[in-house]
Image (tube, rainbow, N blue to C red; front, side, top):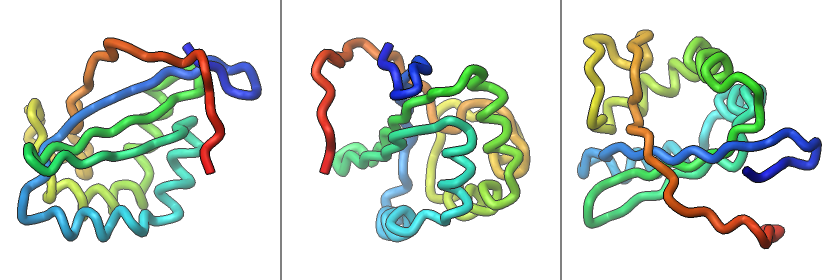
Length: 133
């Protein structure tokens, strides 16, 4: 596991979801201007280096984040309970197609489960950290 400058161990998470093909432009536009309140909630919940990648041929969104807190479930619940994040999800969730969502309620209405499907990390080479410009 990598460590942060304050010596708190970090954990990496990867997950995937399908983006509806007709929603690519809207999703890209929204994520070019993520609301500051949503970003602030992620920071308060110990999420760092959150990135989302798009694979055109399959329509998949791959999300990557690093977690530096002590209780991921509690921090993620704080994100899910945040009113501005719920508003953000209400706009974004209809653009996506989750693989394993079974709750009758959508994520932004308090549905439980993995909207983005978690992935297993098979390899990580973290021996030579770099600074990004």
